[in-house]
Length: 282
Image 1 (cartoon, one colour):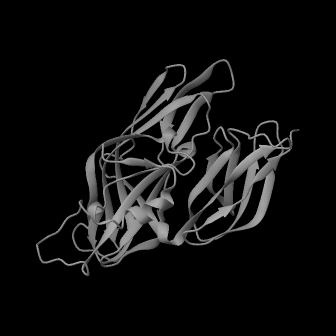
Image 2: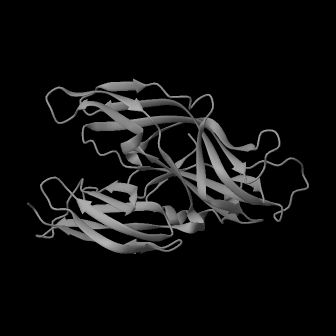
Image 3: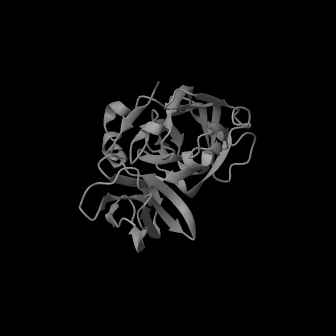
């Protein structure tokens, strides 16, 4: 599998400038120079799946394509990665990302990706396995707009984040809070494509009034509707990565605790915005 896991995706910006990284790419001929080609780094992460009974959530991806803005002749999509990778998105939480080898692209603007998915499997902690049908993902790919469009410049590296929202992508059949439990899942992939040059991240800690960290507390960001969601780890840490520049309302809550909110939380490009929450038990 050609991917690595990083706790801090922003560190990748420094890593990809090293000469040895530019080993993957494509060229139509031998005349290309650094001024005609730029490099695209594709990373994948997940808006964490909140059901505590789930142990693993595997999605198989075999190709990713990108479309150059306003290119209409023939097939406007270019392959930026092809292979056979299965990722456990339960491991891609709170800023941990998987990234694919960088690829060279012509200088220009790119506004859409197409992701080909051929498998989706959920494994529960009790050992139950649910193998789901993939609706057209393997044949036509899942098309996702990049907002704002990503700009590839000569000799430089652009960064695209694909955020799989597990909470929305796997629709639970049955009630996990009753003895009958989970009956199955329906796979309806929901993905954000984020231009990292125009995005930052929220991060922080969630604790109770005794300053004890709260695991599995839900934190989310809204702009009229929910943009991204995270769940805290065992240390109470959360991260909402790939947040487009702008102002958000942040919320944090947990079962048996009140919901706490922060208004007018601002994201600036390539920066971290820290907000800690103290939840009051009901």
